[in-house]
Image 1: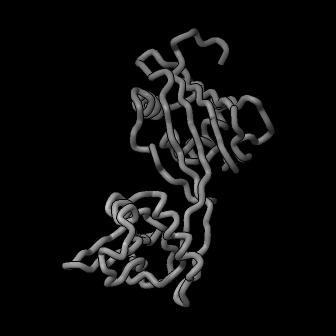
Image 2: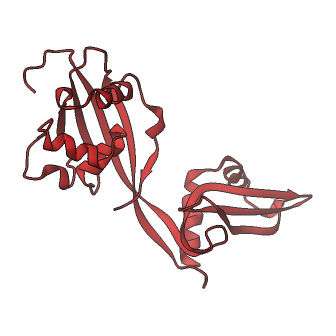
Image 3: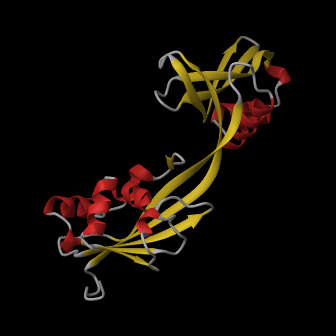
Length: 227
């Protein structure tokens, strides 16, 4: 990879942050089976005259069907703190997290609530790809527990895990610092991955160049399920 001249390599920063999401397991009417429901961070608010109902929305992780956790039921509007009411209307993330924690403490028989780890992935193109791009450099920044490097690369580059493996077999991927079977190990903060496009098929090279032509907004805020 050292033979590439300046300006011939596209550069991508991949940032992974670990959080936790409040989930519960309950029967999903759409899936017809027991599923994991995740805190959506959004509220449903229904006001009738001087009374209000409010729910925190959980969504099925499999089909996205919703289930509403009651927060206020037929509550007089004047009895609710105005700041809380404003936060409900704005889908305030802090209030959603606190209400999810309250739900955790008040778990009901139909589904035990728990904290499940999740990872958010964000991308930043530091050097866009052009028609002359001959290599891709990926810089990893991880806060918290990592995940397998091959899975991280597949998600960031929108490639299949099998395609990442094929690139490895073709010696088109260099991991710095190196390690035996590095792609099967956890990604590490500060790692650099170099992909030589000469080891890619023409179709894959086109996909990678398109992926890195500009800022890819589709992955900002994406969540990786723990596996």
